[in-house]
Length: 310
Image (cartoon, rainbow, N blue to C red):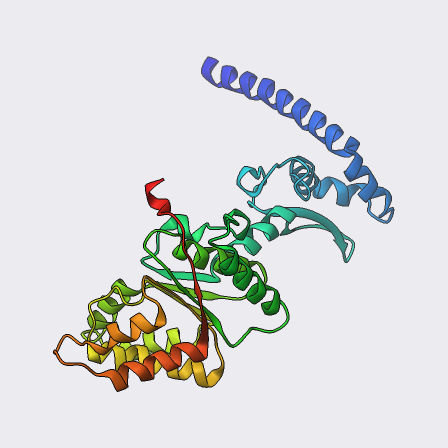
């Protein structure tokens, strides 16, 4: 009997504490400036309706509204990360809903933009390259001018020709591709950046799983295609004619630009492409590929010191 009385006494004591806490919570909620403004705007709400929905009002009062208590999307304090609470009245009752906050919208825009750059086997530092960081020395001025001219035109209409950056090893040709790709991303244009030697291996592997045609179609139709280090791959007549030639032919016909980097000039690349791994020289077929390259890009040479040794 004593245990029951003791338990009952404890419950009554705790219950009084609960009532006190509830009263304090209710007072704090109803004194909240935003809650007061909401209730003042809806004088039709009865005390009973307000009492019934007190937990909704409490939830609203404790949340950040459009990032007023959060410095970024990652530091969001709300129950539903990236969403801001909204109070409204419908059919005489209080409702609480959530809408995307400013930080969430900015986060989604950034994520969507990042998806505009796709790459195969390209270093991460290249994917973060910026036009603003291009060194404007005399050996690179023509390349910078050509890149900026393309980007300015792309704001209104995508040019039909990209750029064939040729020059010695290490002068920053690949960085140019990354910088252009990032600037294109900012204006909503997608790009596909591919490291050619690995691209060749990717295509050979794709034959085994029957995905080669699907991948070729993807490369054909990218807004802007970028082929890094063309001529460095082990050459095969099959890849030159059936893969590279097919992609370039489609893009030439559809007037879609292609960017290239190469340690060879176009004239030197033609000589390189003429030699296949089967032996012999196929100048006509190599010349056909070079002509397609000329139709989808214009050559710009880059010289200077090897920046990878600095």
